[in-house]
Image 1: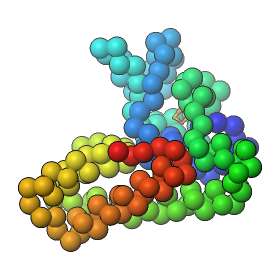
Image 2 (image 1 turned 135 degrees about the horizontal axis):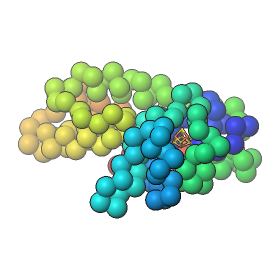
Image 3 (image 1 turned 180 degrees about the vertical axis):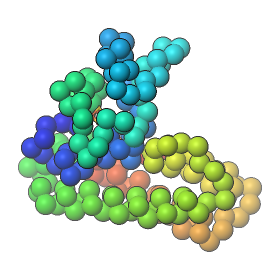
Image 4 (image 1 turned 90 degrees about the vertical axis):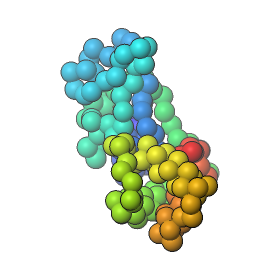
Length: 167
Ligand code: SF4
Ligand code: SF4
């Protein structure tokens, strides 16, 4: 998440586990971050998982956020900054993503199989794998078909406007 005068404040989708599953860290960033959140630093994997523990409506460690966060700008933010997209239009897109996410979350809670991931991003990865496996072995139920379609629509919305794929 970048500067606070932009669309990031009402958005937060790259911090709350919707668009991104984990954040990569430099080795020197681990000790200070370990004081405020769980960091995975085994076998040369230096990351923390989303949803970010430092995210609560906004970044709680903004001045000390990792380089990956500081450098990250999604396509939507670029489009607003380059004046290719109006601020109000970007807010509507963010709102639509949040509404579609909430609807999918309700469906995920009704699934017959258990999802292990905490983040919406990885829950979608898990659900897609399971639905694809079930679809090739058995027939999907009507509600699973609806969920599968909802995920595709959301993925399309996110890749079109944010430049990120959930696959
Ligand atoms: S997803 Fe894009 S607009 Fe939303 S908070 Fe992250 S950088 Fe900002
Ligand atoms: S450290 Fe801050 S900017 Fe980075 S993911 Fe967490 S809340 Fe977002």
